[in-house]
Length: 385
Ligand SMILES: *Cc1c(COP(=O)(O)O)cnc(C)c1O
Image 1 (tube, rainbow, N blue to C red):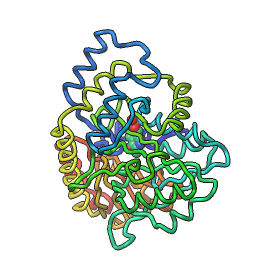
Image 2 (image 1 turned 180 degrees about the horizontal axis):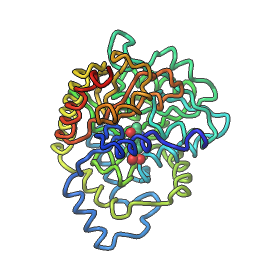
Image 3 (image 1 turned 180 degrees about the vertical axis):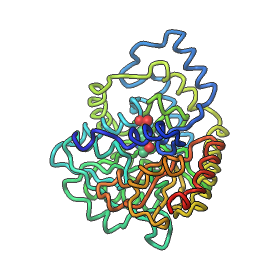
Image 4 (image 1 turned 90 degrees about the horizontal axis):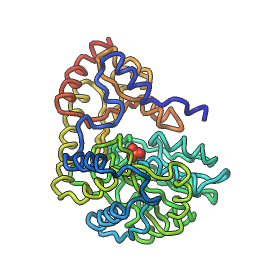
């Protein structure tokens, strides 16, 4: 665990606090989730829903997750095959720890969500990270090279860990890309672990395609999501995973010795929230889309290259046009330069050169906070010179 002793979020958030910078580093919303959800949880705590819930999660929430999959994706999920976890993070960890051992390989994209590399290391498996790069195939969005993806697979591949919409790049993998991933998983008999925590944060009319809904993949796919992201309550850490009975049984075995259970008062409230009307989900996406536009325009005006974000809380920029050679060094200076904090993409890469000049900004903040950040960033070129 030596390479994983500190996280960039802790370091950058501490720096932001020390300098009074606006923290666009860590991806958490600065507004609360739906009032009905908050009131439900408060009532549950006062009303005595405070002891260990059942190991797999309460039936109402497992049923609500299954209903949610049918409502949004036409997917049939048996509530018996839903496992409630301590955030998506525990679902990912349980899946990797349950399925992988030394000698196995996990294929994922880099940059990746920061828990991936640490969790794979805990399992003793080897990470095979395939680059997502901007600008390939003439498009400014991040994409993988199909030949590079294929080359990462072998008979040692045990798991394909795929995140779409993708943190940090904001990329939404399209049906064709997902199909290719699925074909490779079938060819090499790998399990797909699909991290879909941003399933309700897609912009410009894009639609989320769950991996498990592609033909022939349901039997080998574990699908993961999180109430923290969907309901803007990232501190609650309630997530879930569903999939075929044999795989889910293994995941449950690992999960029950990580935390056993959690979130008793949250679980019934989240079950109710999943049934909120479409307007809730539509407003979530449209609100975030306008925040994306606000921050992206400001970053562009400040002289950064801004890669289009089609989903998530994040937009990735390139700081090279500012004459900056190292994104990490830039992020350490940014709070002092203009009073804004961000995170370097290189820390999310197995090969740090891949993201050397890339910097991630979070836009899941109040409009007035983003407006103030944009006005501060307008001083950036002067501050650098
Ligand atoms: C936030 C996030 C998670 C973790 O979700 P929690 O429910 O907070 O554990 C997992 N994967 C990705 C890509 C994320 O951005």
